[in-house]
Amino acid sequence: MSNYATYPSLKNRVVYLTGGADGIGGNLVRLLAAQGAKVAFIDINADLGKQNANWCKDQGYAHTPLFLEGDIRDIARLEESIDQAADHFGPIQVLVNNAANDDRHKFGEITPEYWDERFAVNLRHQYFAIQKAVPYMRQCDGGSVINIGSSSWMMKEDFFPAYATAKSAIQGLTRTLARTLGTDNIRVNSVVPGWVVTDRQLDKWWSEDGEKETLNNQCLKQRVYPEQFNQMVLFLAADDGCACTAQSYIVDAGRGGL
Ligand SMILES: NC(=O)c1ccc[n+]([C@@H]2O[C@H](COP(=O)([O-])OP(=O)(O)OC[C@H]3O[C@@H](n4cnc5c(N)ncnc54)[C@H](O)[C@@H]3O)[C@@H](O)[C@H]2O)c1
Image (tube, rainbow, N blue to C red; front, top):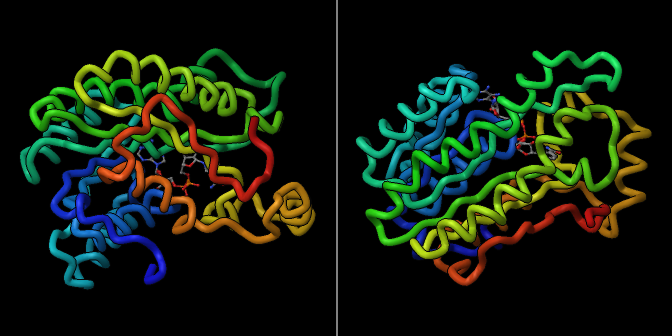
């Protein structure tokens, strides 16, 4: 990350994020820890969660990230983990709602139960994490909420309708809560990935044709990696994003979006 910015305001900043074991969130934990932030994260994957926190510890960063095992579909556990993060590091100043699951599903085969489960893993937790974190942010006279969206619905991708619908709602959630929380100096934004190359993407969804099509659509003819995507998240977490709220920032190498 040597060519990227260092943000003085991220030093000692208390950040809670969901899905910090792997992928974009895993990388974000490492970037934030390198900036000197106090990072706590929940994840369902205990092995990778511990591994990520330990990796940061081995780097000798000022603060070792706190890994909290849990499932974000379980709102009681999600809320408890936010309290645990605050007990450990102090009041939450930045919340990154990142965890999600992009499993494929077909239009005609979705049951009401599966629909609800897709919304629980891709949308519901974002609202309740904000509701829980806001009192801590008020104690700090402000904060930053960053909701990770998806450009899939903008691109009219049709292989996961419940996921795409849930992800589209993140834009509405962001705008309405930006109004509600603006008077508390709490900023609410979303950052929207196009195709970001993670291990899961390569393992589960990659194909030569798919990558060719993506690069064809992108203005920049190169892969987007988590570290590149997360530069926008760091900016919004830092004081540098202090005048930005109610926005969705697309980081997709010019793939499409709205
Ligand atoms: N990678 C992409 O191309 C892409 C594209 C569009 C949107 N996104 C969005 O970016 C965010 C991160 O995606 P990613 O590609 O890094 O995903 P990923 O699958 O690589 O990582 C997600 C992390 O969340 C965790 N997680 C999943 N379900 C959980 C649960 N129920 N409880 C707790 N933790 C859980 C996983 O264990 C993992 O550590 C998501 O919001 C996703 O929708 C990613």
